[in-house]
Image (cartoon, rainbow, N blue to C red; front, side, top):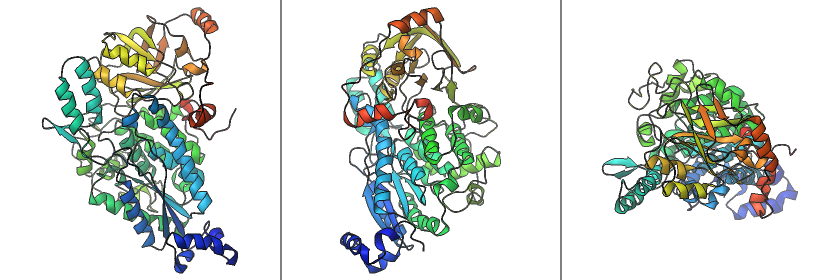
Length: 558
């Protein structure tokens, strides 16, 4: 088997010192003739999403070793979105995507791995792994850590979003302090990623649709025999990819990304997928932009009745068969490209040849009877967002909203106002200076949106921001506004009482203020200082692109 990269590390008398080091970490003489496999584990005890991934890495390693490779497990970082949510620490969430990608790239090239298995759990792990795999373009395969089992409260499933919404309900005096505590205590029963069609499950599903993980990998419970087998088989599959010299660039094509977008829409997935898919495409040199989401969204319906906008938890979808029969439904109706290559070495159509669409209609609707006939992810433009913004409109909230702006310069200030019940029916909440550069880090606004929902104002209050949203967010919300406030975007000049109109029928986001008045406001505006920034967050603020470009840090610096 060809050792395209590791031969420079292990072959020749002059590489005796290199081999000596490798012998100390478990190599024997026969291993030096095998391809070296990096197993990138995002294991950490900082989040339940990743607390089991060390064991999954061992299974993946076993799979590679039993199929002719020699694996080395290494770690990258992860941070917990759920724990950092609503705190200054959330500024580091999106930054962690870049650190994960950088660290996998660094270790893989430094050690001379011939191929890599990457295993991710929490939200930013998945795109971070894929960005690294795209940059490296070596035989690669992604394994999803799996979804959490739901907690149970009063015989109903609950999860972390239930807790966020319970905070709003408590502030509205619809539940007691004791009830809030009981929901908190039972919401997270063990390992696995948050249990709705939130960002982690959205991205895992999109990556499987992209062709970069084995069939079924994205819709398995974290603590299951299925997930153990998935890891072993992924390790084995990587060796076959090395033998056939199948690389990410062969799989991650424009058509494959169109499949990923289609699946994201049909599942009612997270708005974060826009950021992440743009970044992943950029890493491999595929030209993808936000207008592709609009183009594809016109013909793809929302079919999945999954949380946060729907009824069911991810565990139920997994039990029914998960993504393969779902892909079969989309393929049979001409909604995805069947000729795209995958990490099995076969096309999507070939992978689905013996799969039956036996999902029924309770969780996944029929094509002819969708939850929404077109995309819930709406790319909005207008005077507030000439370069684009991303809305999540399920249809339940209505298709348009017009109201008076209530403006905040940070998430914290907004949260204080919500909990003090200062937000009223008809308000458009504006949270600014939370963009990729201005935050920096583009925090998720799950705490304020959940508190609004918990107060029963979900369909009567809108929220716009140059920040972003958790996959658990629902309601009338628009994020990713570009240009952001820090760059002098119109969102920086909005005042309390201004009229804002959001229209998903025309895909527009408009501030009803004259150009003359906006010009006067712009003259008085001063760009905030970021002299206080240091370290990783400073480097990120300097390098990061706009949200409409994927908030990437490896593009050309202008």
